[in-house]
Image (cartoon, rainbow, N blue to C red):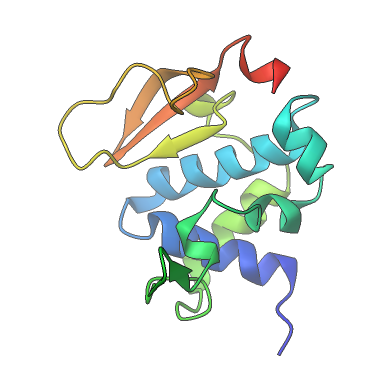
Length: 147
């Protein structure tokens, strides 16, 4: 069964941020769409403005794969069907809406500790901007644009 891009996006929102409430899910959806629309750098070069390419870019979203480090990953978009709230947020993001507190962010992650590191990813191409729920969000630095 082939899933539509909307379906995959809704499932990604559920898998990546389903326990984070509306704001957490909207923030994650905003980051994913930011990667689709960024005018340059790695995500523009590899994703070429295509949401599916962004979601399935290797090493970016654990939820997009069923194998991580050689082990089965049960928490993935293939095992987690979307519910109406996830479709609503996917449609909200696909319509061009953004959560303003992460309007430029290209990354997020859950550090599983109360504080967020100041730069992410490791190469320093993002700087901490906000925490929403359990996720830390990062805006690109100049370094990102040379990736």
